[in-house]
Image (tube, rainbow, N blue to C red; front, side, top):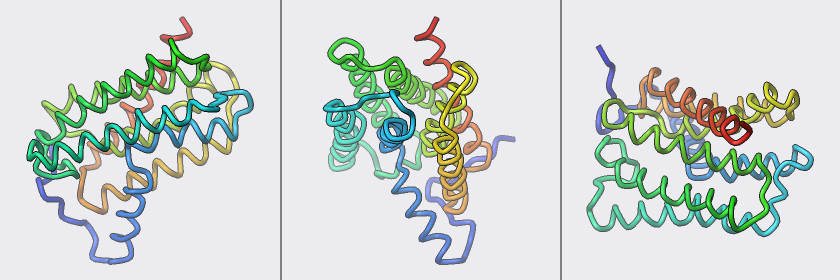
Length: 216
């Protein structure tokens, strides 16, 4: 039997401090932030990886601000019942809008800017992850938070295997973030363990598939 979460999550702990911390982690490492966070981390820790420069403005615009604005408009117009999108039907329009903006960011990265292959892979992988979540959402709920949280460690793992070298600081940071996010979503009752693990799998698989596709 497939275990499902209720439309209104019920926290799995009575400790107020854990609930507050879990909500804080969920906000700080919100799915819309993780692609930009990964790009910034690699730009700082992996020499010669991204060279963000002025591209950071477009990255934030297309992967954070525009998707957030769409979600806000969907909520105000009543097209979704809750901005937290616990119900699968509430996720469809926001995921479609987010996917479009992520693919636009990838197109800009490829055709308008001289971006590194790593940044192209990051954006393509993030776009594919949203598409996969959208497809699965019609049958099963996936944790978008853990999918996004798996982007950073996923990219590190891919580089370690393919390029035989990665930043251990970035990898450890990514693992810590992924564990914190997974724990937060579980404590808040937003997802089952299966939904959380599936999110990790989708996030890592998407980064691996994008990287190898661009390097074939």
